Image 1 (cartoon, rainbow, N blue to C red):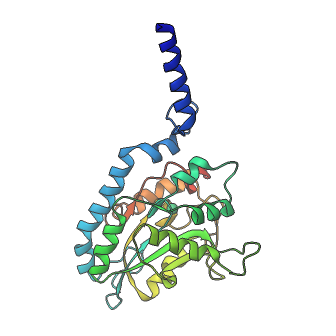
Image 2: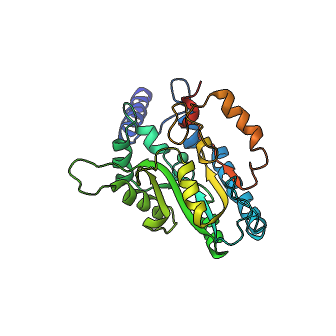
Length: 267
Ligand SMILES: [Mg+2]
């Protein structure tokens, strides 16, 4: 009898595990960078901390009319205030895409994923954007998702619609005039300096948010993109930490990204 009971238990356990999809487990052989983004409460806490700090800083940076978070634009007191946020790993998390990615990353795989699944919000961002908007600040999203034609689709930039959809899925309303993609205009390459300057022409940009050095600092990529003429190195990026020391946590708010970024290509 006891053996029969044991066999029954073993069969039940095997049957149960076959019927449920096992979650990805942390441990040897797993990509700890992706596991951290997927499961670490620490990641959620950092995101909450960043947006809480920014919410506290907002009244001060808004009131100081000489302040700009884009170096070189200080003292432009006559412009309406704006904030620039990156999208991926700043407003939405791509951790599930990374977890299920097969083979090398391609922008088409990412585009198809974002169209198939609801976006995952970064903790705190939607509340922060609501507070900023209620204080009269205009919100721009500057992303290096690329405008590019897709076979069988007449839209010249289907990625813009899917990006707007993703931002709306995390509870932030947005229109086409406030989402600036790479290649959306002829001179908008992957160097985000160009699009920051575009926004700064008409607005006083009081805060920048991103997960990549390039969301804040110009010319941080290993392969330079116009107007940059020299590629970045680990040393040049480290030097910029000192140059912009006063901005971190004071107008510039960086979120962690353990999974990907321009840092991976520099030497
Ligand atoms: Mg990003």
